[in-house]
Length: 188
Image (cartoon, rainbow, N blue to C red; front, side, top):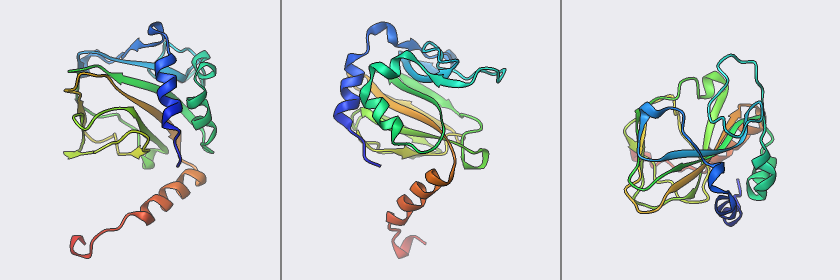
């Protein structure tokens, strides 16, 4: 899936400081972790968390109109989008080991990561496996498994996260991606 990295970088840079809201789950991180929501329950840009009552549908926030790169990427998805947000992990910050329950194919919702600003120093580990995420790539991992992140660098790390409802279009993208992966015969 093509990603206009320069457009996403411009969007990150154009957001005013007040658009970044501290992450709600303060028990799972150390340092600065914040986000800017483009789709959120009730269209409330200050909500980085789901509506546990299930009464508020996910809707676009005013920030979507202010970020044309994010808007274009969202339009390229032919599957329902739930939460969509930038998440920024500050220099020296850590996201502690945790699980994001009910995110996976078996539950019908997957979380995709698009690294926008990062460095090779950032350690993103899922189920004990480091993921070498580079800017502009689209990544899926089973975040229902234990994962953690450490940004030892001097700059913030920013990812665009898209929570997607699994449909035929998304399954076709995953099938095409797995067909491109070559597994050596000795690894089977």
